[in-house]
Length: 268
Length: 368
Image (cartoon, rainbow over all chains, first blue to last red):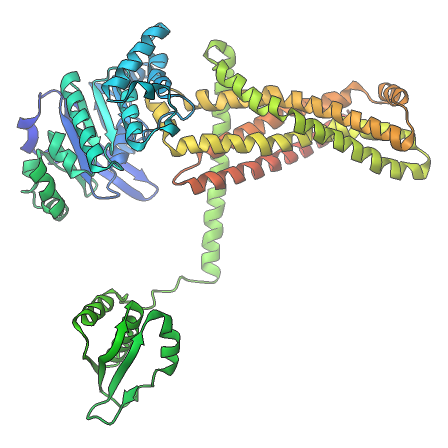
């Protein structure tokens, strides 16, 4: 394997157990190669932020790991299961152990928030209705939504509330890994900071591994243990944010030493 | 104005050089003699300058300099100089980008791409059709997997709520057939055959065909729009990550609802058509309801009804599969939802009519 996982960040990872192991990944749409020979390790219990310029395939990588996009080449192992070659049953088992929160929530528009949070439980668990309802109410309150939000439909919620509801649904099955696609995009700075705090708290209290695609430098400084930079079709470098300013690559330099980065660093 | 008297020509700009006035200014612009190699543009008289005015000056400067002449701008205030600099910097360097090739080759290119794309969508539609069939069979084998709440909602939406319009449409078709048929048949004194005319055309062809067209416009479009917007909002991806099969959750209840309701709607249209035809024959031709019914019994076999009804589930499948398939093709923006909805209605109506023609040939070859 080439130097995609430079040893910069290894010492900072919470444990040395690997939650997600991606090797030699290649994604291609028509003639356009998005990823080639991409390697990535996500350690158990860490918050990994994925950054990269527009069109470097951050979301594609997330979608590939959770099985929404079939890669042209490569292997992906999540919690020890080879998800690309697993049987249907094995896949369903490992799918229960992760949750995904999409950028705009992707809540089911025909269901209330409570029903949305209950949907994965209905599908995967055989529990009496009242227990599922109580558990769903618990998740809704854990993500900081008011009690009455459970009876609302997604169209009646603000952007920030939708994202929180989506997080509640992602946490419905008490997953070990949470995938977040641009969790703070489209939120005002106050809402974004509150959401960062929420993710940080939940991550610590529930012992989650968080795989987060983001643009938000504040989030990177506030909650990410390690950062993986996507550039040149692969993971250029991974490591804690302090290391990033020392990486000799034009995009990385611009991103982590630009005026916005300095502002975020000041706050963080 | 151009002042040629000075040791080198000076173009003096006076008054307001603003975008709104560019047309007039361009026409009044003095032509620069081709023998001048040194031009001075004096902006000191300009009261106002905006990007349009600055562009005019900068463009002139660039063009002259490209010809090897030198141009100096003098008398600009600080603001004007800053604006000039910003505009000069922003003028695209390559004035005329390479024109896209025209003629035969691109036409050939488009035709080739179009053919390949069409082939690909046929393959994609067929594989989707296969997927739907396997899921439908799977649900029939394991009925407890079926989402009954969704099925009944869809049956109400596509079936029950369509009854009034389908019945009215059938009734009007009966009336029209009776009216037009009577006018022709009266010439031969064969008015009474209007019963056969109405019954055969409504039961065998028109009842079910027009019902299918209405349902394609009403429910097919609704399927594409609603499922398409779910695709857009990543709801379908979210389902997949939660281990829910979108085909089973979204497509099966909708298509099954159509399979159940389209024959029923077709039957309602048939009855309404016979009723309308009978009523009109009574009013216009004096064929009493008793005579109408007895001729119906005597001349029109039950096969005429059966042939119509046999087609209903096939039409339902075509409408359902096309509309859901189109919905799954939605991507990008809400514009795509609109395009796919239009395509869904057009394609399902077209395929329903094409299929009806095939059935027509098939049944007449079979001699029924």
